[in-house]
Length: 142
Image (cartoon, rainbow, N blue to C red; front, top):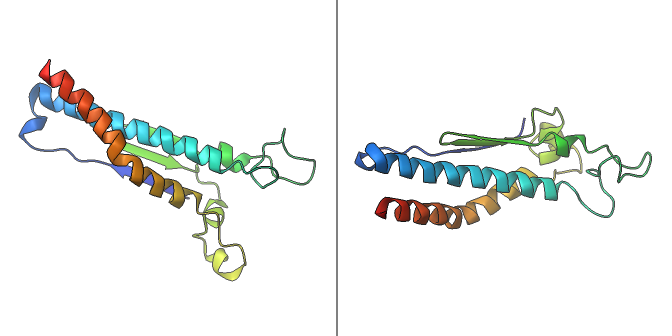
């Protein structure tokens, strides 16, 4: 199963009382936004044009493409200080990602879609966090 995992642990005197609730809300918002952004990017990445494996059945010509099952199996879940994007355990997910032992014995090295989306999310992380922290600061300042 291919997964991305985001978890942040917040401790210290700032996280006691109202400040802690506001900061936790900012962190939660950041995680939710990053998880949603990652899910959207994976959805776009797994829809190559004009022809490819990830086309939906409505877009696929009969017998020439898959039904888009893998793309529809991508799900994101965000809860308190925790976010995850997964392919729901699709058995061929590691092969499509390129992390299966089968990739070493074939010419197909995988699409690395989760890895590439993870790298873009790491680049965007600080900008997303800053927006939520700025909002939290405004709330704390009244």
